[in-house]
Image 1: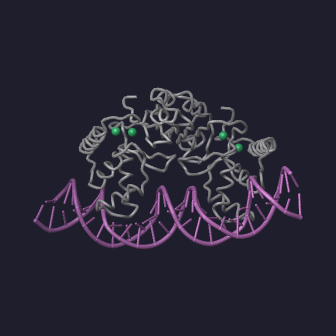
Image 2: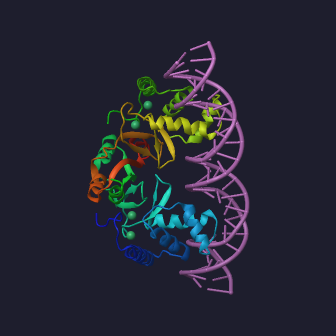
Image 3: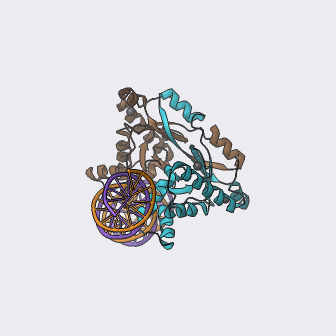
Length: 159
Length: 159
DNA sequence: CACTTAAATGATATAACATTACATATCAAC
DNA sequence: GTTGATATGTAATGTTATATCATTTAAGTG
Ligand SMILES: [Zn+2]
Ligand SMILES: [Zn+2]
Ligand SMILES: [Zn+2]
Ligand SMILES: [Zn+2]
């Protein structure tokens, strides 16, 4: 794993890297990183935890954007459709992507103690699930891979 | 894979096997497979698709059980806690277990065309995710592994 | 059997997550 | 500047899930 956000790290760099990548990608693809979309990405990037759509909506509202659910859901749809954020299905919540750039298949390690969500590569063509799919003749299009447990930082606090 | 519920099969046997296994397990463990719990399991077993809690609730209501959400959620809690059913996080819906018996880590193949959900073994200690977890010192307690795509039966219909 | 206690159910209310629909505004191209 | 496409504002509604408290049922105990 290139990064490990369970440990203390230069988080300002996490934010600037991701925002820069989003800006460059949007410029290159003719996508519009509008103020509400950009602010939503910044909100997600502010921590490595998954945030609910209504948590995000409350912050957007406080910042002078709209106060109705579609404001948050539209921004999240844009960010997830373009790979800048992901939905964590097990939490019904959203997290900024930490593997910005190309299209990819995310997997998550979710600490149930501190809430930090670490993104890894799912490698959808490998592993036991891919084998079961091949045996059944099933064509995988998208995979949700989310492990819940405890991160090293939390376990060292409660030994 | 022992079974493959994407293909035609003796489904009455699926049902009787699973209900029998649940009855034996409850008898052995001193658990109470009450009428509403048993009926909920039968409803889930009636098809190999995931059903929403409110779909189940409507059927329970029609059968003379209660009509309020906790009726369905309590029965589903019992069934999932004891391994007779699983929640499919990507669908916010529930499916009967087809690997009855011991405690196990399920993975799912979900056909987005016909809705059939096939259960496989997740093998939580293998695969790329387990490797990433070991590298990060993360202790996995539960894994959500859900692949969405198309099953062989549906693909042969739309070639 | 009567008593106690834990588990399960009934019922009400509310919280949390998400979408539809339609009006208005902004932007890019012509 | 007009046009058409994209984005936003806003109201209403739909869907999924939980909290709380009263009541009933079942199991264990003397
Ligand atoms: Zn960081
Ligand atoms: Zn990502
Ligand atoms: Zn069957
Ligand atoms: Zn199972």
